[in-house]
Amino acid sequence: MIPYLKAARATAVTHSIDNAILLANHAAVQTHLLGGIVQPKTRHLSGYSTIDKLRDFQFDKAFLGAAGISEAGIYYHYEEDIYMKKEVASRSRQTIVLADHTKLGHTHYYRGLSLTDIDMLITNQPLSPELDHAMKANHVQVLIIS
Image 1 (cartoon, helix red, strand yellow):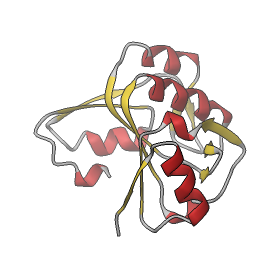
Image 2: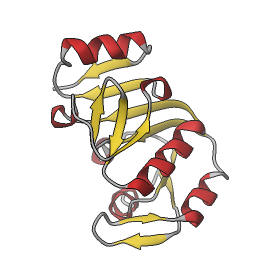
Image 3: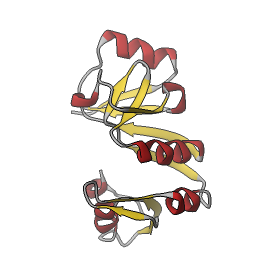
């Protein structure tokens, strides 16, 4: 998503080292890289200081990834991710989940958000009838981009 940013002016907050590097190439985007413990495998920062710093922000829009999406909610591979995602969603006017079709209909180790916590799902293929029904029942807008 970052390479497609066309914002005249924006502020981004991330715990991802890779996203911060990509955002640094956009002069119109002021980037905040949250502190914490470096997770070499995921190239993210995590820990108490990461969550604590999030409490300084209020977001207009939050864009979150997912390891899995089912009728029961949004799932993540790492436990520390769920605390981060919950905090971000609670501080956002609009929570948008970005996930390709390989995540749809799947769960993972940790459920971080329920469908009531998100406002929009952006994906690349139509949802199964069951997942589509769950999204509609929870007032989640679905945008399919191919």
